[in-house]
Amino acid sequence: MERSPVGVVIATRNRSAHLAVTLDHLLALPERPEIVVADNASTDGTRALLAREFPQVRVIALPFNRGALARTHGVRALHTPYAAFSDDDSWWEPGALAEAARLLDAHPRLGLLAARTLVGPENEPDPLNKVLADSPLGTATDLPGTQVLGFLACAAVTRRTSYLDAGGFHPLLFFGGEETLLAYDLAARGWGVTHCPDVVAHHHPAGDPRTGRPVVQRRNELLTSWLRRPLPHALARTRGLAAEARRDPGARRALRETLTRLPAALRDRRPLPPHVERAARLLDTDTGAPARARTGGAP
Image 1 (cartoon, helix red, strand yellow):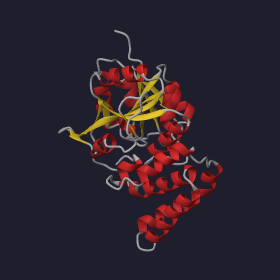
Image 2 (image 1 turned 180 degrees about the vertical axis):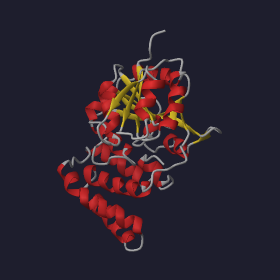
Image 3 (image 1 turned 90 degrees about the horizontal axis):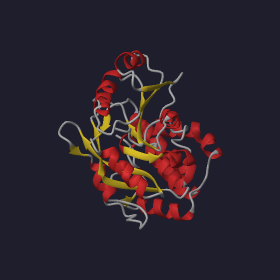
Image 4 (image 1 turned 90 degrees about the vertical axis):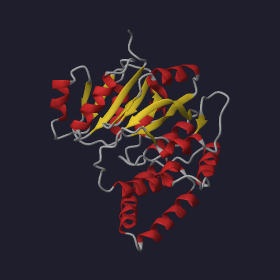
């Protein structure tokens, strides 16, 4: 049986036990995908585990923690036209990668598809599924599913050429809510980003959430505004976070970290094309969706 045209990229750091479970699931898939693990300088024996128990998996041993940028190293290393992202606690349902390949083959403008995510052993639907399915951006005649500007990185499949064309995940954001900026950049380059619920990913959160994640997500949401949204929008978001910072230590830290990174954001500022900005503004006003879902950030 030939390998799948969809390869799987996993960025990991210091979660070898969870990674082993994920790899067991991925290696059992009937699609037999190529798998690349981009290791963010783990110190818990991850690389030794991979060499000993998973010799068929390709490993990119990064010299230091590159955050989400590790996924770009993985995509570049793939020999397949399509790349599916898994975290070290998520994997793909049997047949999901074949369905993703079929959709990408049939729709040349489709740059990235957001899968339906089932959480934990009970396969509970992630709340983001409904938000993506109900996206006010609607459908397009040359794309499957519903148009969106957000996704979960651990449940997304991208065309390799579109991902690299958009520049991949932005290094300034590192990790935490990094998906929205990539969705913006794909759309700005003319690629479609859609939610396709027939493609299914499984996410089993490890139960050891990264400390400081809410702060990082607030920081990255504001940095994304400075990187791509109109100045009045970015200024209004900054004033809002500054007001919260007077009483909220988390907001204060998020604001401080944003201001530290602001010069770099301004150097790479590229406002969205008008049609993408209109779509982003429509999602801004979609008050029925939780903030995490509107921005596409992972939990």
